[in-house]
Length: 148
Length: 395
Image (cartoon, rainbow over all chains, first blue to last red):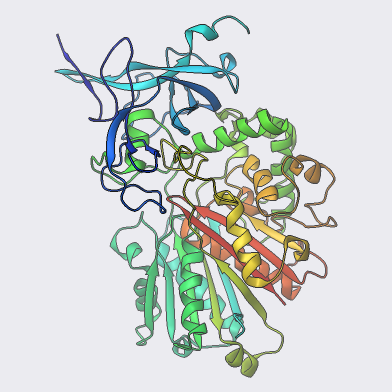
């Protein structure tokens, strides 16, 4: 069995059922950072912010979306043959942050609508001999099923 | 103290895919600008180069590379990089030297030899580099961002793919007679909509190509200019602003925005702040502008810029376009050069080329694409990693 590992360390948990993106939050001003900022708070009015690691919300609202109909260049590792995919920009309400990601499971732009609820899932990005590498994807939230 | 500097000379190497070194494009543009200014290379006291990151070491030290190619003359030098806003960085450095009295006359040069297809990050495994990370972990290219903005515009303002295509139709028409444009052919709405979908809702003909090209300016103090010419075009403002935290609109090459939690939003968004800063510095407003050169990386982005440079309220850009206000004979022709739609993008040359176009327009020398009676114009552009770029020229 190949080991399941994140394609890049430190960005998300590998919890298959309820994965979470990993960011940091400033204890002083309350602003968030993803990917995690560990050096200092980037709010220019916040001088002494200590940063703590936090798990970001798993669900958010679709701010906008698009598609990749042509194969992106390396360092992207494309499937062979390349399969076009949709990309979502999802706004997390509590954190006030918008995060991009591919849309999971071949769901195309026709199934997407600005404002719809989205949730975070993990999907395989590529494999080598010993590892299956994972990344995060967005997908219409379960309670968003139905409609058009 | 006046912050004006004079544009004594302008020059460009035509945009295209020429398969040569970027150095030659820059040298040709520089020689044309010197000839236009009536000066010799030996007269130049300061060279400001716009860097290119895809042409090896000479590209990272572009100022010296061009100086050596023109013949070492002892001129002082700088080399700047600000992605698509590189040209504004170089103009800003040259202008600051002139206004500080450190030199009287400077040469600004930017040139690029671009790869075919998508821009990709430079090599190596660099998870801490957002430009590497977005490609590797999500397959997100530059057109991804153009597609996201376009879809957002459709959701918020009711724009259509036909509106986007109409921008290409206009810019293709504008570029028809521009000798420096790469594409000089009329395009119909149907041709745009019939071209391959690249990043929904944008088609191949909605998105600018990557090009080779070079552009150069000879800038001088007003005192120096008055000894050489009468009524030169002036640069009245240069904006090279960065965003104000939090920048809440997703931007190349990032995977996320800043957070709105716990902080006040700035009065203006980043893109709105770019030309605003230039207007403030020039003491002018959008109502004083007779033309604009905006960065149409995609057709939909041109519509966003109409609002972000203040020539119409948010949501009115489609109407402004449909009413013909942004073409010849309208209130404010936008991209009379043909824009990136007709040129494709030659990264470090592009913001300089925008100023070349303003100069020809304000001198009345823009043959076949002249905005009649133009007295003032604005450029706007943005480089990834937080680089604003806007220049206002007057005559």
